[in-house]
Image (cartoon, rainbow, N blue to C red):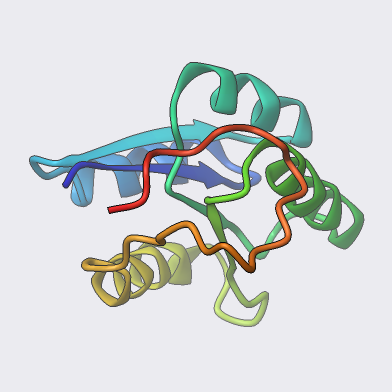
Length: 123
């Protein structure tokens, strides 16, 4: 099953490097450098995972998380540490994607949905 991943970080050049290094069939990467990039990305694609870099200001990271969960009841959010710096972004993204490779959330009758948007049919 194809996955769409939104990468958010301070430096567009690092996002491009990650996209190139991890490019593979069945995965589409989108990128952005600010909270203003989140909503348009969700309008453009059905995003599975959002990975937020550690170099962004804490208030910007929090605003991005809020924007993601307002746009989607299905997307997962992953925030990188600050300590490993920009060099740690590629290994972090790789580790997240490997760990989530087979993860496909299914709609639960007990879920509290806040985005109010229809998701893919439960399988």
